[in-house]
Image (cartoon, rainbow, N blue to C red; front, top):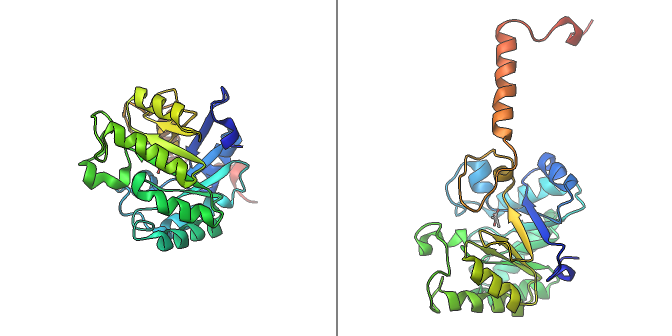
Amino acid sequence: MVIARKGSADKLSMITAYDATFARIVDESGVDMILVGDSVGSVVQGVTTTIPVTLEEMEYHVKLVARANPRALIVGDLPFGSYQVNSEQAVRSAIRLVKAGAAAVKLEGGVTMFETIAAISRVDIPVMGHIGLTPQSYHRMGGHRVQGRVDGREAGGKERLLEDAHSVEQAGAFSVVIEGVPRTLAQEITQKISIPTIGIGAGPDCDGQVLVLHDILGLTQSNLKFTRQYANVRKVSIDACKQFVNEVKHGVWPDDDHSFH
Ligand code: KIV
């Protein structure tokens, strides 16, 4: 279903979710894939990078999303430290996310992850790659910075990103997230590889797009250039809670109609 949409005018969509309630809401939108992302660290756990998120925590959130029994494909994110040691560690971690309910796993890295992606794919677990601005490489990048703006084969260089994309494809990934790269580079990668590219901060020419649910809903106060707030659920939520507080304070709630007799 995902691979067949390569180059299609019917673009792929992916939204994050971390629990059953939001997974049901996201699924009702008709989205193609639900990503249980390690962005759970910043949007749910309140940490500033994805680095502290553990495999046990990801397993837990994948389980919650799987309980919603969504029609959309569940992609579980492998967190930092759960796959970088060697391929055996990566396969074991991927199996844990699949047992928790994921139908595919996502991991960050290109050329250096060739053998890891191949090993996970060999045990029949579909892998989604993730190249460009890879948040787990926070310390190497010196922050969350747009990648591929400079020429070169060093990590983050333009030619290196093309190599990363080819590597992920050759290793057997079924799709790849391209995050935080110039539009023209994402377009070139999309044209040159045979698997669907899913962009975030990578312009409109990818085969699909992904956004973090809490940004879409306006629950985070993010003003990042590449996110889009489609609703202001934060304001609606604060207003609803304020109304409750006010009604309790003045003895308006609960009234007799909402009391047992
Ligand atoms: O963890 C996440 O939500 C992600 C997306 C931003 C691609 O990796």
